[in-house]
Length: 372
Ligand SMILES: *Cc1c(COP(=O)(O)O)cnc(C)c1O
Image (cartoon, rainbow, N blue to C red; front, side):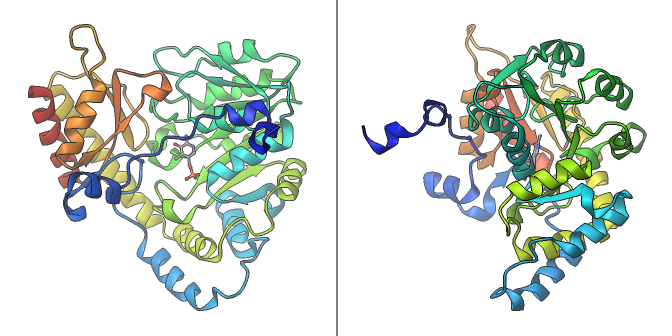
């Protein structure tokens, strides 16, 4: 038997994650100048990163010969103050992706199941499949998670439920009251991973203090990231907040030095710069209105979004999906958005909200692509 054939079938069946097209790749392919390309494909922060985080990275550079603090003492202390939880409730990850993988690794075994919504974040099926577990995909209602359906899908073999709020790529949102009612019903020996990667983009009146649910729900794992509103996607740092017993499990499972020292320093400084987060939020609100007005002008439908991106619908042509064609026409004009056919949304494209100028570039290019 060949070596690769000895890899479990469920590993060999994993479909590679499809990332947004990098700027350098499009520049090479189309002979474009990198500076002329607008990338609105990966929900990155158009403001870049906080100047305080940048300064912290520069300061940390001189210590790169040393291993990072594997216990992330300073970042945990800062998060502990910010969220009012003890450091024992925190797990720091190489992106919040790491937390999703760790949660899957801690609980899933071959033959067990994980439950998540249709059109939910792609990492849930990936992390499930990597453990030889089975994903139960629950139909969505108007692209939104159906919490009643998700609850009904929980069986004896279910060990994890993944909920994204807001969800990517749909941008849909669940109210705190609905999630709280859901948590009240789910058996306490089933982990509920509540992925709040876009929490900082929610209007204040829609934000819920999900951390307080940890007091009564020891099966809850809240994940957050520094990749989106904090602008540190390239450094890979996120965290989970959970009960101390679950945190202890995940901390044993993670690599001893899973988060590098530049990321730790930058995240600690970024957390302290809430003024930057507030600016990112404001820019996102105005950009959202700008894109919605643009879509309205072009007669296009979109899914109302609570994140820093919008999925809009490309009308079919002669009964066939036309989103891939429009994606290609945008690329030719140096604008990168994200196809979401892999999320069973073949007629949608997802665009990240950029700066006012980037949004304009996108809307002009979209008008051209739709008119051709
Ligand atoms: C972007 C995103 C994440 C965060 O990924 P990182 O690994 O923290 O960069 C998590 N969940 C969802 C739904 C996302 O869209």
